Length: 453
Image 1: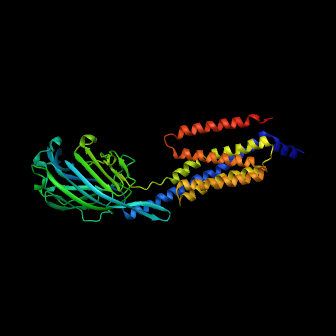
Image 2: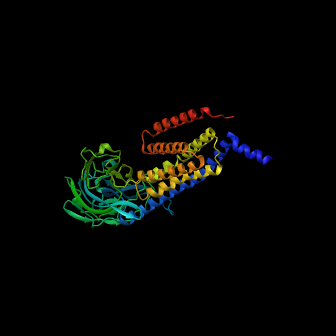
Image 3: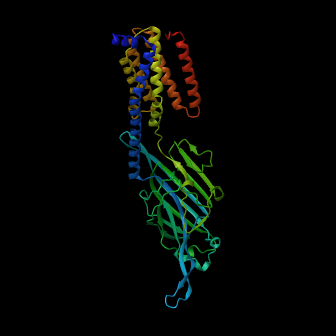
């Protein structure tokens, strides 16, 4: 008798049905969480494959240099006590430090022609580039450090450049300084943690042999030129260390994305065949000086250039759509609940569970199809599949045509609404708020005649 009363209460009580639907929604959050984990796993897999391709081909190129490195002597006094006579004398100790001087003018011209590399379903952009670096140094000024000219070791000066991609260099790199050539040699340098967490690029040092003294102690500027051919991937950036820095990048890449602290000057940079971008940066535009003593600073945060990454936002859009999974399941169950309450047709909890699982299948279809196609096509195929499945299933439950058709139209409108929100960026919040308000008003209007007793 008690079991029959409980069964009749479940079938006839609106409160019992609402509790049952709430429990089912909570249960369905479990597969939704697994789906979100699957999206993150596939996104991480895509990133690891792209990084592996880039590592073998050549990583992004970040160029820092050339920089004139000049050693100089400083002196400190030390008190020395004779152990036998106890006499205290002063001893002068000589120390060798290094000063770093940036170019007066820095001109960089680069031609970069990327291509797409694939591995399985994943792809990334790689490129071969020619980089011509030219400019001049003026005679280093040690007056700010109060160093006498006699204490400057002019005959031990060198030129250094730093780059993030030694593996991708395809030629013997040398600098022509005042018509004399000096080859660059890799120099090991202990890496220090970057102060800025967003700058995780590791720079490797190339340094010349000792320069001829006459090439830098001249009254007129010392002209230099460097030619590089580099295989890289994803990005090309430089650090504007010239008192006046000019960068010109030409490419056949049609989806240019300019990044960093500075943007190109020319308005006609984008063409039908690619882009031709020009930058001009003056020393007054950046918050660092032209010379440094004792240490060379990490200036990665001031780099700028071009991003050649292939935009892959399918996983991001899938993740955003999965965040609306709770809303889709809740509103779909609410529609069935209102139909059940109005029509007095009994819907079993198992049938609610099957409908909920069908809704979660939308996201697995969306992820798998978007990996082989674009997001729009995947969204349409996954959405239509789930809408048709639930509409046909509801026909077998409700034994009529008008309610399944209404359910199909409602699901179509809901998935369309979510797709619009995913595509929007600046207006996503206001459109979503208006849409949810409209849905709430529709539910309130539809439920006004329900007998809650």
